[in-house]
Amino acid sequence: MNDNRRFAAAAGFAFAAAWIGFNLGYALLCVIGALVFYAAASVLEGDIDLGELQDRLAPDRESYPSTPARPPRRARVQ
Image (tube, rainbow, N blue to C red; front, side, top):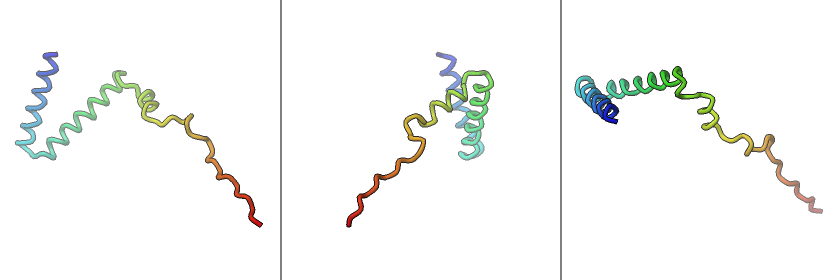
């Protein structure tokens, strides 16, 4: 747990240093790039299963009818 705190502190320091040295936009791009590469490495190592993730995020198809329901017919008024 100590290692995670030290890593978080170092990452926070690096972010603040990039923010001061460059600007906020470049610092945010660095964070986004790090997140993308972290996610890609997690997928490649098998920590994240894309099929399971897709199943969790997709709506439940069984709860929707396959064809839209037609409105009931009105009785003819004569």
